[in-house]
Length: 228
Image 1 (tube, rainbow, N blue to C red):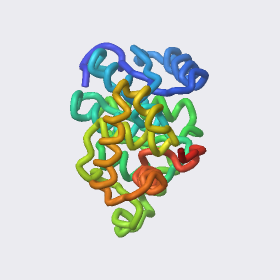
Image 2: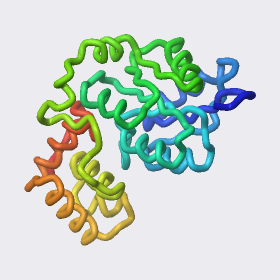
Image 3: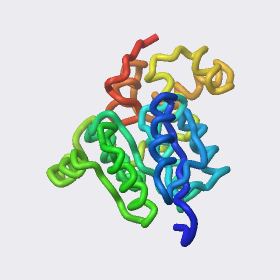
């Protein structure tokens, strides 16, 4: 945590109108400075390496690399950076996985502007902050909820960052050719990653990978999926 100067913030949100609204909101607040933006999880990781912000405001549903996996990488490369998660849904899987990854807080997008500013300040102090809906979930959750079938609150089974990217894109309905174009790799390499994923996860088809990605909080269940 910096002793002097404003709290530096990186905004990670793929919808431009939302991102611009967040920037305008935070730039009006004394003591907070927006130093950059990112429109994908992968870009967020790169921007954190470059800018070393105090706090990242991270949407969960992000292209290329979702907000949860981007948070995991940021925590490894810049542990001093605090990450606040944003989501349209207070789904158990997302909240518990965010906690397991070391997120500094979790807010739903219906939260007030005042609450977001408070969350940034609390995160900068090294504290955690949750919107009331999320706090109620954490208070009421049952101990066994962490081990419910289909929910993955902790680490995923030894998947590499590239495998995570392929898994997300496949689960979003991208064909091998589209995945290859997105990641700048060959179709044969994509096929190899898919094979590795299926073996590691003991899953035998694309629909199974999609169900796994939803249950693990890799993609939001509200996303419209097309299996190709």
